[in-house]
Amino acid sequence: MSANDLIFIGPPGAGKGTQAKRLCGKLGAPQVSTGDMLREAKTAGTELGLKVADIMAKGQLVSDEIVIGLVEERLSRPDARTGFVLDGFPRTIPQAEALDKLLLKMGRTLKHVVLLEVPDALIVERITGRRTGENTGRIYHLKYDPPPFADRGEGGERLLQRPDDTEEVVGPRLAAYAAQTAPLVAYYADKGLLRRVDGVGSLDEVSARLFAAVGV
Image (tube, rainbow, N blue to C red):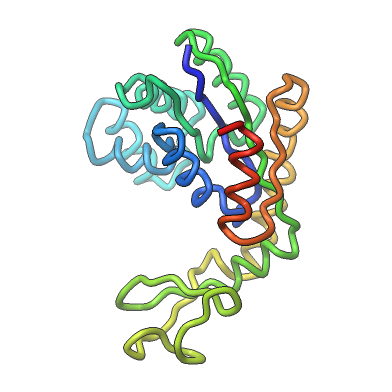
């Protein structure tokens, strides 16, 4: 059984990816992102990867069964033996139940489920304020990390807003989170695994709260 098997949950734009990466550095455990796994599987061309590529090419959603298969494959690698930080999965109660069964089969036990809490209004501000340099891919924020010029980045490059960073898209994304993923809070709280972390503040402030919450 690993001592450092963790899950990160929280709304889009809460900073899960950034904080999960920092926690992984502290634990010496891999950050396991389902998005990365899907892309890796497609590239690797394994039997599971070919299935994923076909489904994604048709614009369909990858089933829970396939994602669980990818998670099992990833957690079986040597670098995950001493722990992992699962980011982006599970998103629903059925996925959480499937993960429970998988971990039981693998003889592993979750230690913590971290909930990164950020108010909706701040999430909307964070996401809609993001801009990306057209040539460099450098990410700015109009308020928190402003570009050198009002509407241009380094070297005068044009700044773009990603289609899913608009207010029209953020609203539905938050609604989907509330409907599908928020029920996981009670699910893991009932198991005594939930660790609430205030995600408001500087990166270092949030990291300090996170490390204290999980005891590292």
